[in-house]
Length: 428
Image (cartoon, rainbow, N blue to C red):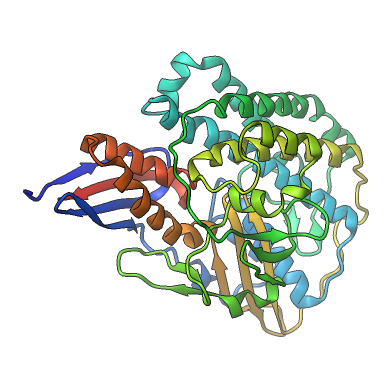
């Protein structure tokens, strides 16, 4: 077969700069790579020497879609290192802030980044021409998530109120109650979303993933818990480094993360859902069963349904937290720095996020390690491509490219804090 290269120069529905490389020989797929070529951003290096009070504002800049996730992990690590006890009212307010991030992130992904793939549109704007009412509802839901983040965090992008020990300022109860009607509408939109997306066509594709997520003592995982897996892992976050390792690969500027004992694993909505299904409210469990995704759900294309269910959960959780809100006074606990090590782990919308910091006696960062969800999913994405692309045998190359890109978007990868291009290349 004559060697041939096909390029897709612009795909605007993924955050960051990356490429897909598919190699064929004799009509057979021989290799698939997710090549992340965006330059290294060196956050861990320039955090060294900065004080613990600067951490939340600095790490928020890693991502404009999920800054709360980075801030929450950082303050958790600081508080653990310095032995800070947190007021339960602060913990509840932080979870409410995180719900806002889930709402805005999932609404964005489902409608503008992922649904166009299932309906045959090149982008969300083209889809809006035929589904304008749905897109408007989704944008309203996303705005509600942003408004919730602004009410608590001071602004919706890179919030400024979160600090070690709590918040610089906690909102008045009336400011949160003012969001109730909008959250109820967002909840209704989430229910409609699940009913809508479950009617999409899903390829008959299953993978035997090792799912990894946090599992709290009681609630659905958002802001903490133990690290568990579908193959028996159950550890405190402090033991993360004993079980997970990052490796450099030549084709990516992002490190690949693997389990030391078993290799590839999967983080994100499907992992949370499969490992914590019993923590969802019964009505959401029932809706999941009606939608065909009751655990075990191993079809990555059906992750769009799971995100719809999590969108619904975040709306309901936010309404409950607002109803029971008590303003913490004072809004933050005293923090006294000391030499030590701290760990933080939360569930960002795209999956488990881990932070590790070493501090000196004055509370300055000596070493930092940050492991984002997309870095952890890189190998999983590549293994999906290696298994899925051969099922497209006989399809036109343009269709293979489109479906390969969709397989990547199943993960809502956040390659950087900005949305740029994903280039797909087929070499024959």
